[in-house]
Image (tube, rainbow, N blue to C red; front, side):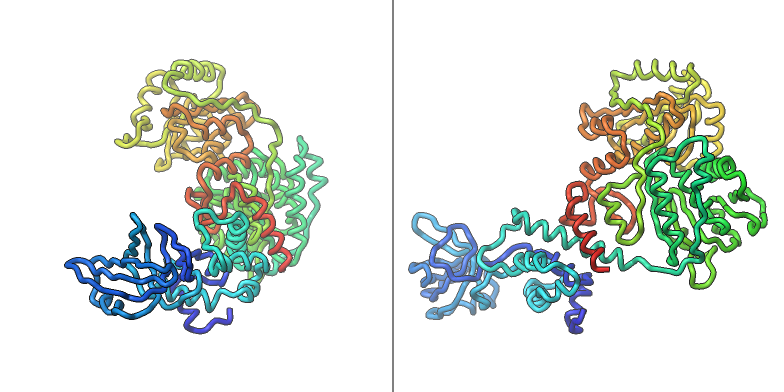
Length: 599
């Protein structure tokens, strides 16, 4: 950055690493230290004045000024003056003073006047880890058009930012900045963030760069791959042919057929080995079953805590849970992680390390069934390639309804009919145990009601060690499953037709969508009931009208405001101060294009 040591220390103290980040520390207010000839009532202003008299009262100091720029007297009042303030006002001295001017009945006063020296400019004030005057000097020495352009910002954006810090004629109103200024701040914030993301990306040589064909295999499948499945597979095929190891995230909605993309990837990697890690034994089993069914000619191994030590060298495709991390693994040219957000970065890195040899790295694909907003997908592309699968192979028929206490009788009737038809019902409660704070029943309080009225009622939750066994048992012979949101990911329950979510307004829309995605997996007519004590909720109403996970993710942003992509969590409260991911897609696009040109 070509900084002096002193500048570097100040940047460090402020927790900033670039001039663009410094420019994003916007002033909290401005002092207009220019001499005006027109008096403004109830405004901070500067007077060029001679001290006519000084009077000390018990708790205050009163000074009579003759203000030359206004041509009349103004009384200055200092409340509880400190000793050093006394010395600033000597009768007969002419100086510049700054304070709040009020006028009543032709009598003007200035409260807390202070002597100032840097006259003639609009001076920004900053709230930061540095004192305001030190910060101002740092801005003056560091914030230049050249410095901002040297970090890649466009000249017109740099100029807009400089206007905020060094306004020429008009004091900016920080509450109502002009649209083009706000856009420049948004652009700069995204530019800085995405530039950091792209700097995080590391390029490694791939262990292998060859690719087998998948098309003959695709023709043998009992269904046709969707256009988006094919597009994702083609993008992966191009990745595999390169010398550089792939880093790609494939994001698909619930039931979008990501499994076929996983299987096609393993097939294209042949004759080289692939490894796939899934977050639960159930998911690993499911993927293993599908792989055996659709890739009959490939040697496939399953690794869970229960598998005995088998020699994995003989297998082309190894599927497992995090139990893989505690095994000696043979070299593999492709690593895949399903439901990647369920694993920490350390676990993903360890898996890569276990199958690598020397400096070269395997190709790496991560799959996620949590759709992300398009804006977020574009931002992610700064450090990883992204494929989106937004369509599903078959249309689900799920009716979503918001229900209240008075609908309970009808709900019971519906549940009876579904169970009699051989279908299953999932009831999601907000908590396991009773709570003082929450006005909804917990699992413990509610289970007796259901167990009394229905047989084959199963119960599970996040802390339940037997969770997977319960789900497998329920799958075979259950009628009703009572659970917390633990079932949101991945488990396939072909007979599940109805989900009832209690206290639905407490959950993010993406979580509701994941839960709704559990039903109608095989084309059954599905029902999703959102039970709430709220009399009305625009958020839930909008949810019932929307079926695409990607649109839901956008709605979630609108209602919850963003999250942190670097940390991979979409919590409420965004790491962006200016950017609104729900609204600013165009700005994200232009930053992405401009960063692309720089490479």
